[in-house]
Length: 88
Image: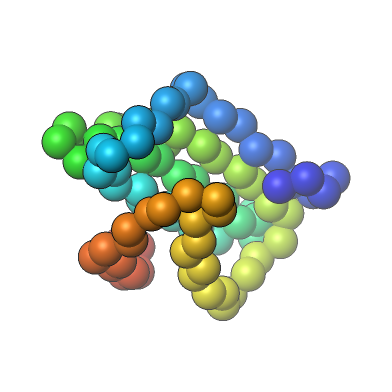
C-alpha cells in the first residue's frame, strides 16, 4: 500500500517454486483505532501453517465491505478450494 496513510512490512523472504502447491491465507481486520490491518502468509501445502504472517499492512480508515479478486499474471496457475469465512 503506497499512500501516506498506509505502510507494508514484509516479515520474511519467500521463494515460490514452480510445480509445487501452496496455501495462501489473507486476513483483513478493523482495529480499535478504526484503522484496517491487512495480513497475508503463504506456505507449502505439505507443511504446517506458520504462526507468523509474512506480510502486514495497516491503512488508516475502515472498509466495512469489500471483495476478493484472485489473478495470476504471466503464469499458468490453478486456483482451487477458495474458502472465505468471517474472523472469530
